[in-house]
Length: 318
DNA sequence: TGCCAGGCGGGGT
DNA sequence: ACCCCGCATGGC
Image: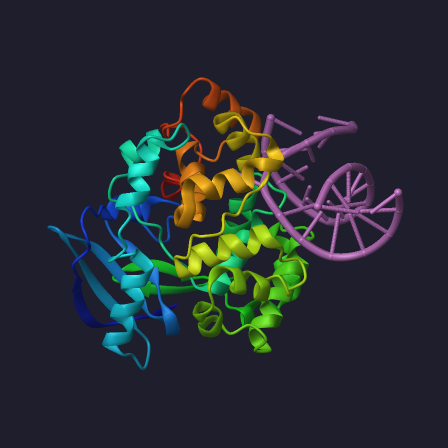
């Protein structure tokens, strides 16, 4: 297993309030968070090991090759949303029937951003599948096709790249993706052929980025929008699926067809972030349970003895 | 055991 | 602009 060497130590000063634990624990596998330190894959097979240092975040950078401290700092700031100001989002959330529980418990949380390629894979794995099933696919993808490296005495797995998957498409079909495997390969091809360039997509506004991404066969509006939020921290366009549609319809008292408009009316530039937060608030429970919890007013994350968005980092098998 | 699940595309009307 | 269906896989 390749061992990465420490090449730099940097310190980040987040906009307050900031809670590194909450930021790292959400939707993390055990390879990437141990309860104290976060292990964050970065560009060019670098890894940042981050931990709290008072009000700041200390980061040790590990890298196998050429490396620019300034570029790594920028990337890490983006990944952790170090300068993002969520105060107006939380103000809205406090008064919202879906997110008031989240607002109370997740002060200081930021979404952890992902590279566009991996965001798309994540989103594709949520298509027409339960949370549990989708994340099992991803777990399997990383476990079987990721590249393990040794960082700070610990094994971290770098998620597979488009080339990794194209090199061995049959391995992909053993990861339980079903027909989604074909879409993942389409995405991989779009990246290796250059028809999707992450930096260029990042220059576009959310609507134009969506138009670009839905050119990929198997990528629709839900997948595109979720990816744009995860990769670029652009939250204008909500990835509304059947689950959100049902919950919002009940909570806001509008018909299902009106949900998308109503969601944007209420959440504005925070629309996608609110969708993401809702999955945390209701522990990504399957539709029927989620609706029951909403009806009972149980809209804060619970301690459950099965994987949820906020505790899945504790699980080393699925 | 069948169903069905945080979509999607392709076919209808 | 709608509506409806099939689709791989795994969980209940």
